[in-house]
Image (tube, rainbow, N blue to C red; front, side, top):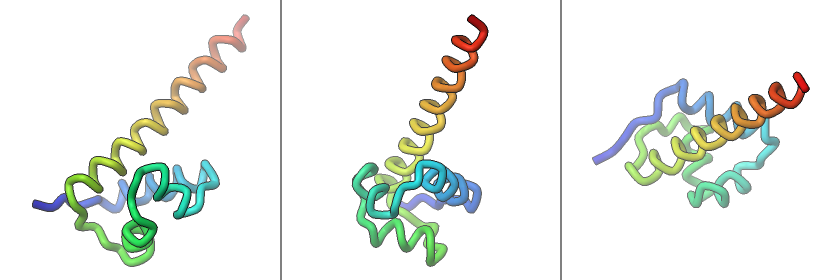
Length: 81
């Protein structure tokens, strides 16, 4: 069984990778996927992925956005003091 990444998901992955100034190689190490898999997703519009790949990418994306939201909330909280 396969999962499909949407264009919005791929755009979010690219955007977050860019915000963090990460290379494809760094991201591949962080999410434990091959560089080739990520290249296929980013450069060749390969959207059909295994459930394990789908989970790794979406978990990383959610973790990154949740971490950023937490940092933003803490900055606002300490700014008011």
